[in-house]
Each structure stands twice: as C-alpha cells, then as structure tokens.
Image (cartoon, rainbow, N blue to C red; front, side, top):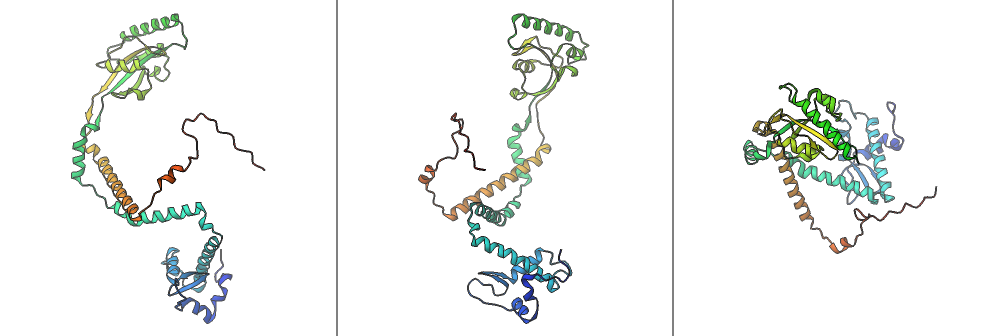
Length: 331
C-alpha cells in the first residue's frame, strides 16, 4: 500500500514546478495522431486528457475527495503509463501478432460490436398477447399431455444360458404368484405383499411391485422388457392383471395400478413459456439478419478450392487405424 503523499518514482520529476504544470495542462499539437491535449507520451502513443478522465471515472472519481491532490493524480497516471509501457513492449516484441493474442483481441472486438449494434435491439423485442394466443391456438394439439399408466410388476429372473427346466420352474413360480395376486382384497390394485414374496426386482418388490408411470407412445425410454410395456398398454382398468409373460430374461406379471387420461394443457399453463419462446425466436431472427448484413457489408472473398485442400487434423470418425503414440520428449 502506498503511504500518504507518496509520489511514484517514474513521475517524480513531473510533480514539481512549472515543468510539471506545463506537461499536464498545455495543449500540444505534435503532429498526426496526437490528441489536442495529452498528459503523457510513450513513443508514438499518447495518453490524452480524455483517456485520463475516463480512468478517473472508472476508478471511483465520482466519490467526494477522490483525485483532488497531486499525489493521487500522479499515482493514477503512473498506473496508466505502466500499462501503456507494457503494451508498447508487447508490440515491439510482436506479441500482439501471436495467434492466441489475435484471437483474444478479435473476440473482444466482435463482442463489443455485438453489444453496441445488436444486443440493445434484441432487448427491445416484444411479444404481444395476441401473438402468444395465436401460437397456442395453432399448436394446442402438440401440447397435449399423453395418457400415462402406472404399473406394478413381478419379475422372476432366469440366468443367461438357463436350461428348459429352469425356465419351467420360473414359469411355475410366476403362475403361483398370479394366483396369490388374484386372491388379494379387491381394493388392492398392485401386488401388495405378493411382490415381496415372489419378485426379484429389488427396486419395486417392497412397494407392491409398483414401478412408476409410463407415458403412451414412448415405451423405449423406460428400459423395461417389451413384454412388460406391451402388457401395460393392453390392460384396460386399474386392477387388471396380465397373464404370465415370458421376457428376454425371465417371467413377468404386470398389473395396471392407475391411468391418467390424455389432456390438453391450458393456455394459462403455457402462456409464460410460449411468450419466452417467441421472444427468443425474435431475438434469433434479429441476430441472423444482423449476421447476414455484417457479412454482406464486409464483401468477403472465399476461395473454396484452397479450403478443399486443407487437410483434416484427425482421422475420419470410426477409422480403425490405430494412432501411433507420441514420440518421447527429451527431459
């Protein structure tokens, strides 16, 4: 931390006398590129009064008492001069031409153009109530909640390579489980304690065999044996029970626990989401138009023949050719 009254060595000569005052305040015209008023010069680069004031604002110059004495002003100028000196050294050493530096600079410039010329316009995109309503009316069918079925299951697994005798034993056991399920009280629509006794599906056996909800029309997402899903689709009302079903890895029983009918989602449910979607589409459309305009104004020339001759950096996807290990480096 700088002590009160400390003057940076770099600028100590400018802190006293008429020379310092002249350097600070005198309008200077030193030729092409020089600002009308500047406070420091490094090579061909000038630190203008406007730039200095901008730095004052950025560093809290609006706070009462900030930058009122010469030591504060000189300390700030020292920082700006040091920063500019680093920039000058980078240019002298051609650091500004390194690919990664150019990429960073280009990204900053591109971001500033987008912020100045596009982002504010995008923020003005508005979606009217009529637009939201029209979109809902035109797409209401696509927003329907599909029918869902809640099912319970008993599984008696059969190991890979099982013999006919093993399959038959599992079939006998699933038939026995079905008889037990049919004997349950009429108000029990799942498998109750029968699942705990017979099922080897650990995730559901202690919950009456209940495995959850299955939406109509997307059975592949549930990872269940197809015979289970097919049976669930055929059962008509809660409590209905399938016949024993032979699957790929064992025998199954399926019971329909509950049905949630297909329904249309209301406008109130969807209004906020539709509004956001339409606004995002409007912003994307605006950005696409802006993109086309910028490229058109730049009038780029594309040499497709040269582009075609640029070799890929990696082998084709799925290429079985092994990639040789990198050569050892000298340590």
